[in-house]
Every structure is written in C-alpha cells, then in structure tokens.
Length: 198
Image 1 (tube, rainbow, N blue to C red):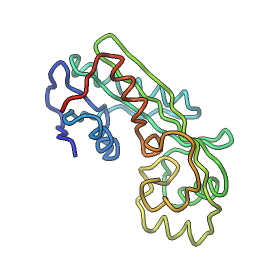
Image 2 (cartoon, rainbow, N blue to C red):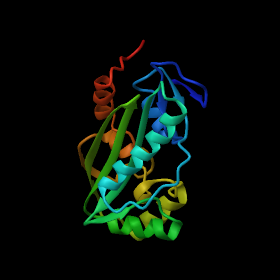
Image 3 (cartoon, one colour):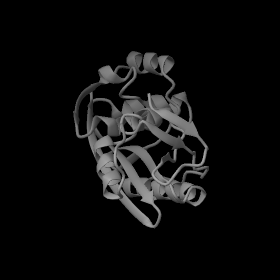
Image 4 (tube, rainbow, N blue to C red):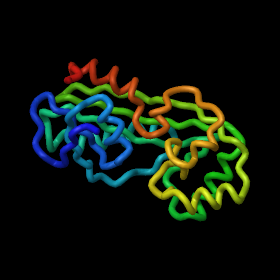
C-alpha cells in the first residue's frame, strides 16, 4: 500500500486526500506512492441528487485547501440512486435492510462527485456507474447485514466485500462503486500538472 501520512505538511507537489475513508486511502495508493490524509472536518449536507455530491466534494476540498494551500487536494463524495431516490449511509441496520430491499432485482446508479484542487485551479467531474443487483431474499439480506459493517457505506453495501455476489453486472468504472473513480481522478490530476512518481 502507499505511504499515507496523516496530518503532516505536504510539499508543493504532495497529494492530499480530503477523506479518512480507508477505501479511498487504499484506492489513491494505486495512483500515488506517497500522499497525505487530512479529513476535512465538515458536516455533510443533505444529498438529494448527484449534483449535491459535487457540492459536498467541493466543500471538503476547500476546507482542506485552506489548511494546505500548496498541496494538490483530492476530495470525493459518493452516493447511490435509484428511481430518483438517494440512498446514503443507513442510520441503522433496519434502514440498511430497507435500502437493500429497494435495490434488489434491478439497476441503480452509483455517482461520485470528484474534485481536484491545486492553488486557485480546480477541476471537477461527476462520475456514474450503473449496477445491476440480483433479486435478494430476506434471508440473504439478513445474513449480509449480520456479516458486514454497512452503516458507513452508501446504499448499505460494499461491492468489494460480501455484497460482491449480489452484483450481476456493472456499466462504468468499478472503482467508482468502491468510492474513488480512478480513471477520472488520474485524468483530473494530470490536468492540474500532477505527474506520477515511481
């Protein structure tokens, strides 16, 4: 895994991840051998549409950029949507089960608002991946919720975890569903002058 540091002052080219998500830390490590991790410390606002995710990612990026103005800040916010409804992080296991019932047996979209900021320059993108869930029985939902920590996951599932067998098909970036669309991020980083290091 990459050499991630928490809360130290980065140099001019240093990447700064505005998140404490272990999934995003791991994914950014696939692009960069060294980066800083600095949680933004902002309260998340309501998310009703994919555009709200981009707003939240900008808030995170701006909060961290004020602390480390010479760093290249990466911020993201991910949400799950089906039929116009947003499925954020469930409040409890009962709501997690309700989310999974609603996602069962059909397509939903995972959106990520992605922001890369370097000084006064900022690039952003909304990234969508479509996911087809198999029909889920009550026993499957109950067993899954008992086996996996779902309360910190949008839509109450992790595609890279025990929910993997539920996913019959995806259209788009797999890593977006995990929480950080790497192809889009790589493109935005290069656009602000970042270069991968060995």
